[in-house]
Image (cartoon, rainbow, N blue to C red; front, top):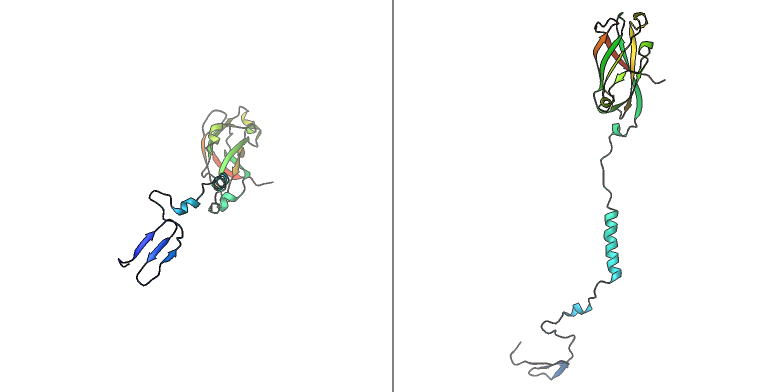
Length: 204
């Protein structure tokens, strides 16, 4: 801008004087704020009302109560399979010797099954449920023992079912078991070594 141009700024308007031009009154649009005065747009801003604040709080609360869905891995087929009960029969083959007492350890070799009950055998000498440790059942392992004071003629002397173990199975994979005979004796208190075995009872 040339130095000859003079500006006259008033509160109601502006006069512009330049060589060769007539004086013109220019109406100001808006006003120049003084130092420390609020900006023009600040005059149009209003504080957040109570209704707006309630809407903001409601949106925050809704997002906290109803988070977006989480994608989870598909459940394995063995975990999705419903649980069912089954039984394992325990046999001892004394091979001609009268069986008066026995003790064995039965355990599940994986975590798919749990022992839920124990019943006695098929022979009258061992039909009463045998002795066992209830705490051991919680660890999928149990030590079972029984004895009979019946005469030799009333004791089993061949293969006989001495106990039945009831279990709860989860999953589709076949469970694993182990059976170890710890002791066996005849009516005279002599120790001998019969043959233990087990098999799963077929559903009736």
